[in-house]
Every structure is written in structure tokens, then in C-alpha cells.
Image 1 (cartoon, rainbow, N blue to C red):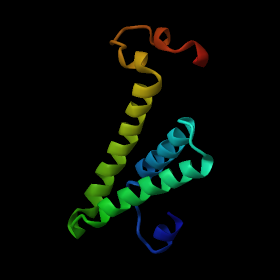
Image 2 (tube, one colour):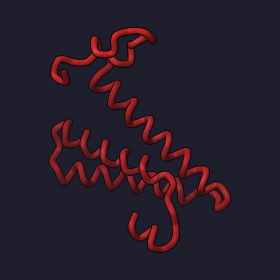
Image 3 (cartoon, rainbow, N blue to C red):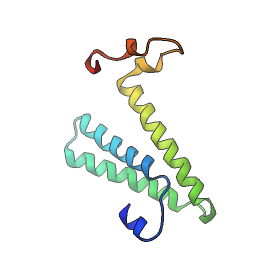
Length: 106
């Protein structure tokens, strides 16, 4: 990230890419793999996203980065809720939001 900004390139999707890499690495370690395996998985997620951005046409790079950032940030939050806190996804408007919170988090 620092190298891109020093070169004058602003990566508009960096937040989503960082969240996706961090989540992938954390989930890998949470699933029982080692710490360095989690770091490697996080790096592979970054590489996959960068390779996807590199194959986009030059005129579509900025919109692609914006969309990737939004999709990854929202997708990681949704994946976290699907894996660890499914009850939150069943809340309807007007329901008590604290009723679906797991006992561990209260």
C-alpha cells in the first residue's frame, strides 16, 4: 500500500482487500492451521485480487477497484455473520437486536 501511494497510485479498493485478506488469514488460523499458514492464505487472497484487477482494461480500473472494495468488505461481514452469528441475520425490523446476540458477546 505504501509503495502504491508513493508512486502516485491511489488504490480505492484497499480497505476491502485488506479486510478480505485479514479475514481469510484469521479464519484459517481459527480453523486450526498454523499462524504462518494464515499469513500465507492472507497473502494469497491479496494476490488473487491483484491479479483480477490487473486483467481489467485500463479505463475500468478505478470502477473495478471501487466495486471490489465494496463487495469484499460487505462479503466478509456477511460471511462472518453466516459462520459465527446466524441469529443476527434472522432479525426483522422492529425486533430486539440484543435478543439475537450470543451469550458470549453480552
